[in-house]
Image 1: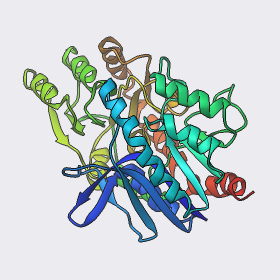
Image 2: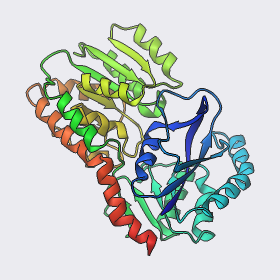
Image 3: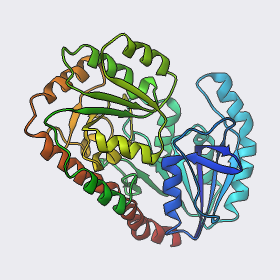
Amino acid sequence: MKLAILSHTEHYLAGDQIVGWGPTVREINHLLEVFEEIWHVAVLLPGEAPASSLPYLSDRIHFVPIKPSGGPNWRDKLHALWQMPGVLNTVRQTLRQVDCFQFRAPTGMGNVLLPYLSLCCKKPGWFKYAGNWKQQPAPPGYRWQRWWLSHFQGRTVTMNGYWPDQAPHLHSFENPCLTEQEWEIAQERVQNKHFSAGLTLCFVGTLTANKGVRQLLKALLRMDNPDFEEILIAGDGPLRPELEALSLRSSLPVRFLGFQNREQLNEIYARSHFIALPSENEGFPKVIAEAAAYGCIPIVTDVSSIGQYVMEGKNGFLLPDNTVHSIRQKLETIREYPLDLLPMSKNARQMARLFTFERYLQRISSELIPQLKS
């Protein structure tokens, strides 16, 4: 089968090669194991590609560029509407070349494309909702897209988490982030990881308010003795100057590493003992499973489906919210677990195995493709 993927994934031109957001590109490269050919309709941005970007690995994947649209203010939203006829025309032309589609939500253009795909497109397909399915409150556009996907169309929707009230066409799917071979390599590398001394804490993600990295640093600053030999911040974003200034006014052993590629991230995971991601809102961040494969114990906010995989005191630590007080309290609680941390690390490694590409592709082959062909 030939597949069209419709998304707002950011792409860049690096020399004569198109590269895109690494986690999404990796997933699409693996999807070639179950689809004959793939067209990806997504955003092409000017400027330099971040280090987290990756190329497609086959000429059976075709990138179809659309202009970036949307933004926080009304002018941005009106401009996005102005561009939608061109986007719709590109989507129509692409859908003529394929047997089925995948639409990746939530995204601003989904407010127009969801009705179009539901009411005007007869091709089979499915919708992948990568955000927090239970986000409260959610932005109006995201809330509307969830309502539409739940009640106004019958195609399959894959999403994070298992929810007691989900309709039959809503399927819970783990978001893949590593291969079985990568998981096994990670196990070999961390066989001798111990938690007796010299602990390292890492944060991996964009440096924005939603990710909670500002609160994390403030919580560490308010502790008498954080007990971390080093604190590694991998990622970049608008908060970086403020965070660097904050760390310079303290004695915290913080290192800002900027965007890192996958090999560099694996090195960070291998030397780290904890990954902290005190987000305000998430679906299920892939970095949790990536780091857990290397025995990093997650310290994460209990939002969306995260608490269905990370279990307090068993394979990680859950924050009730991402306030400075809650983060500090949890970090101080961790000091009470010196003998239990190694079993928790091993449990985290087992949890990560749920997020392999092999498992994901097997589920697509057995659960989704028969529906697409029927």
